[in-house]
Image 1 (spheres, rainbow, N blue to C red):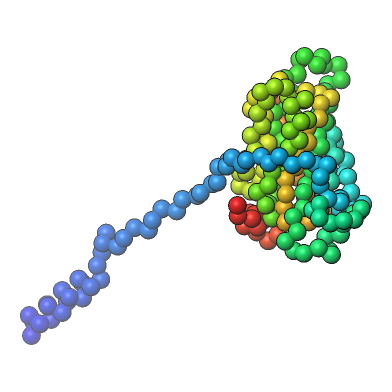
Image 2 (cartoon, one colour):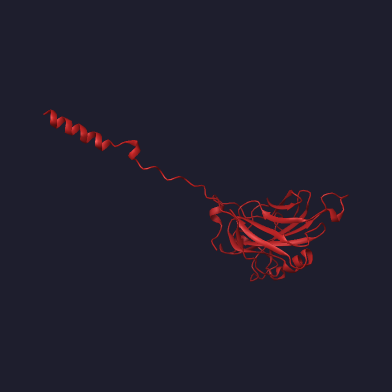
Length: 223
């Protein structure tokens, strides 16, 4: 009898196991998407379709927090034959072109032009809903502004878009560059969702921007 009880007790202890025998959970990794290089397209802005009209998105002008000014608008596809277009009347898969025209001002009215090395970056400060992976800039204007051998890298990082000037004669006060990107989402209210970086200063600007969804980053279209 005692032998039988001892055997049962041993089996019970063996089935319980010990904490050392339990597998350790796999470590959780925080995956952060780094910058991904995108191929800048060549598109003539003169060939865009009609602009979206309305007091909120029809050629919005904004200060770039002491660095300059930005004029922005949103264009519909060229196939739409009208003077203006209304997104409410267009299919859900319509592609809209967001255009941002940025002109730099001197950081200080008394500072000489040759004391300024120029701006190097333009970007959105938020993920772009519905981004169609179409991005670019006015190449003829960039050549005139930045000089021969200029290089602008276009990137996406965590859903936000970046235009980075990596080689140029300098984007200087009084000079203009035009950036564009495309989304299958029409603009919501203008948002302070753009930024220029120059001389270590980050200037924010307001322009047309797609309305954020519940999960904006998940709303970025796949390439």
